[in-house]
Image (cartoon, rainbow over all chains, first blue to last red; front, side):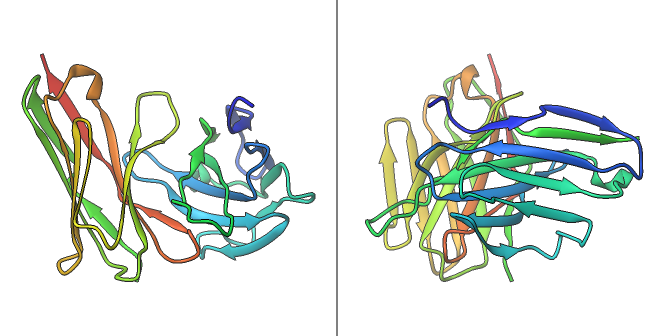
Length: 117
Length: 110
């Protein structure tokens, strides 16, 4: 396994269009996270899944944003009716949460950069 | 609320020590983290400290935690040009939801 992979790496779209990003986590990881990072800022939490269940959504995630993890493996993040303010790097991360002592380490992908014209 | 703050920029000479500081707000955090982001790459965990520890040392890295003041620091000894990167302080806020600071850009002058 080569780590967390995200696709596409870069997406340019016109305002009002819909876009979808895909994340493939590390295969044995049961937790999957989406973050958004804008220039000069740290990653901002958007949502996370444990297996297929979406456990928490940030208030940053407006109703134009939807995330799914249908079989507890890969995840998609869709943005409908994109706005220029949606331009950012969308980061996916995964981790393994078990009953044993764990550190909560997140393994990040390289991100999907969205540019909305 | 959940908030992590850190200084935005640090410049040091090669061979000197670097100290990056961070303050956080969630007193219930179990773990505090330092992540490193190199240009064009994803974030990688550099080190972490459990909340019942005051200090953790890992080769050139020393993490100090002051729970009373909610202050975390990362010291890099003998800083090298390859250490130039963005360093993110982060805290887990329960349930392993991790909140990040804005990042400190470390610039190492040869």
